[in-house]
Length: 159
Ligand code: 4NP
Image (cartoon, rainbow, N blue to C red; front, side, top):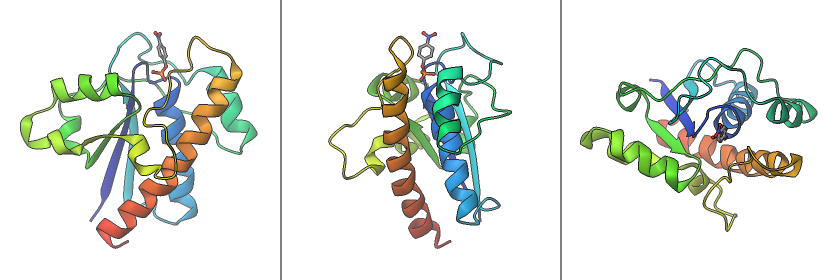
């Protein structure tokens, strides 16, 4: 049995690609790359086909994570069928996803930071119009939540 995770933000060039890259790295280190399918998407279409924002890539590279080959795409209706976890970076993404999702898949849609139990924050803030420290903060939040998510999947699927 395979588990599947879709990370979702607005543009799919900053937060959700970072989550995808970080989570893919952790899953590979855990030897679970054949058991967990990972992707990311945006609720908006402005950046479809584009690589992750260079600022996000720089922060990731400095921490040993490559996002090479990742390209932005928009969330599709079929994603709610395909993925077990549909994880929103902020409440706006959450509401947009809930508005799109078929009723039977509504419960798959959650805030990613639910898995960062030690954090007071519940949303990954949009870093697009801010400075480089915003991207560092995104990375820190994502890294913590990714650990919690992996633990959740390992327990739920008994990997
Ligand atoms: P993301 O960041 O949702 O984390 O990918 C953004 C990227 C682009 C825009 C907004 C947020 N934009 O308005 O173009």
